[in-house]
Amino acid sequence: MGPVELETPDFIVLLLMLRIIFMQQVLLGMVYQMVVDVFYVNMIAVQIYYGLKNITQQRHQ
Image (spheres, rainbow, N blue to C red):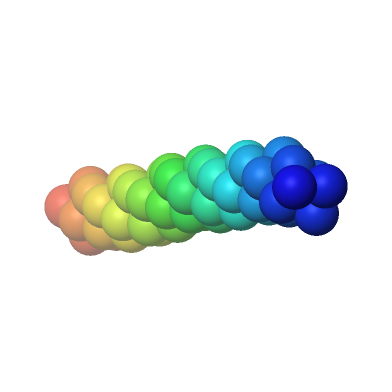
């Protein structure tokens, strides 16, 4: 019975570790996705801004 009693907690600890790692990966993925989204939105906003700026400059000329 000795070894079996030792194996069960180790198994639970392993599951908890895997779950924590999985959660960290999910959170990192979400953060990464947010950063990428913000980056793309900023790029699009800058392009629109410069596009409008160019249009207004051409009208003034």
